[in-house]
Length: 74
Image (tube, rainbow, N blue to C red; front, side, top):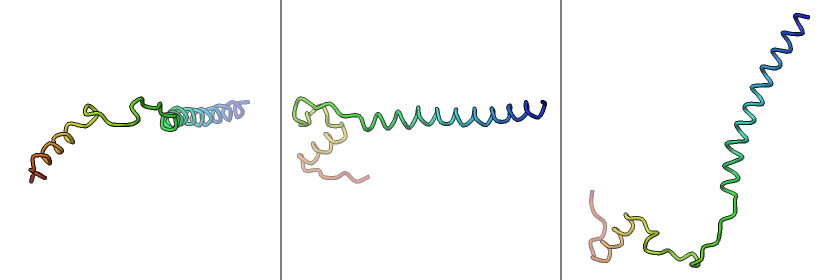
């Protein structure tokens, strides 16, 4: 009887770890896959970028190119 109780405890401990690992994997990777595979909503402006969507660094770089400064040397 003692041997059967020990075997049940050991099996339960191993199964608990496996179930916990599978649950954690499903919550993390399953959620990430669902996030990346989800369809994107269509934009109303046909995908054209507005001035507000450009990053600050890109706007500064374009402004410098218009003024003829080119690349700055660091």
